[in-house]
Image 1 (cartoon, one colour):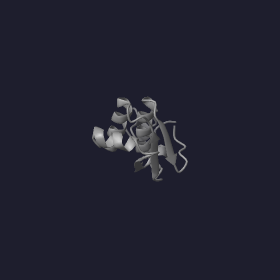
Image 2: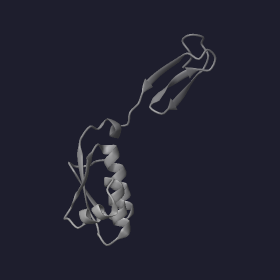
Image 3: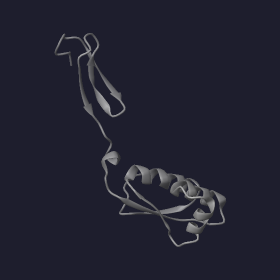
Image 4: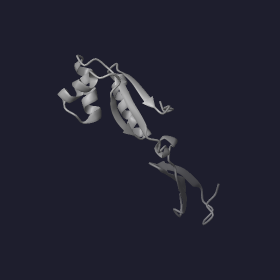
Length: 115
């Protein structure tokens, strides 16, 4: 589609959350914002886990997820399905993936549709 200002070719671009088309000659552009659906999900999710308090990798993953020290994280893992965090989808997904990476089981409520 040619530029409405000068008739030259326009090229599509995407940079971060901005996308649009820009004229190669005069620089005129049309832009819009694009947010992925996970970014606009405002649901508060609860993340619970199951792991072995004797496994250092599990304890470290819980400590990283909660911001607690090793001893507090180990005590959390001695509980049945401890609540590690409440947060929005992007943050919960990141923590869930770090827990799965060390072999832990996770439960998220309400139903979590993000992979």
